[in-house]
Image (cartoon, helix red, strand yellow):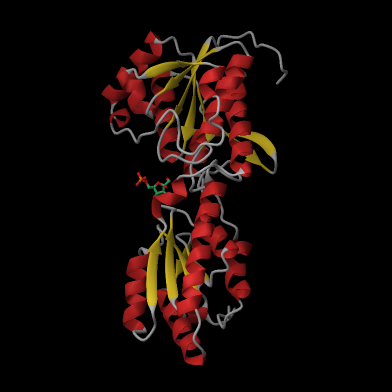
Length: 350
Ligand code: F6P
């Protein structure tokens, strides 16, 4: 797209953030607003996502309203998971406000739920919408990384580093739960970066009995600390549940559980997230102005791409099996991946 003011049907666009917040959302809002100013288009912000659209909580924005936010976590537009937007009545009320405020198109920053809402709204009312993938889970097809993921991994990592100190001092086994409702992306990267012994993720069938067997084996050799990262969505249960089962099987071990929780959602975005958010925010706006709709902007192999909401939501992004394979090897413990021994293989494909 050339850097000229565009002459097209767009006189005013709106930007919103919806679903779980993610570090870098502010950088994305800034890119949309500054982009709109650059192209000479009016821009407004919808407060609290689709709930704000239904209530008419819509504010004018300009270049100054996004000053000094690129480094801030959270979202200046606030976020919500709107139950009302799931109803026909809610969406009808939202469309009334689209007309009232003369909004020609929307940039929606969020995850699966956000794009599902946008897709239905487009089908019913034809309001052009382009998405920016903003979720710490990194679970959207059509982009290598989502905005917020890198920061969340680094936050998890700094927690794991601290846990490692105390785990080592006391020769303790720690089960550390990280976020990821249906995905193990945060778990995989933070396990490798944090030198964990194992990651238990929803994408693979992880066997608690394998963990028990290995812990029995290790404790009989020597005392040592272990860190096992558990993605919250693991099919074996949450970290506390898994740890309880392990404790019953190996009662002599000193086992602790830490849930890193919502700290992973906050904090100043990393450089990688700020750059990604800036690129995708502007990319989404420019896509909208070029006539795209019902698509999500993403970056794959360093190139800006657009993927239909349908694919972004429903296609499964493959996790990196090579990274998963590395975790145990690099932990350097007596954990061993025995290729031909089915019972001892920790990860089984679903
Ligand atoms: O989708 C992002 C996420 O942080 C998930 O990892 C987690 O399961 C969920 O949001 C938590 O949502 P809430 O903040 O509404 O409890």
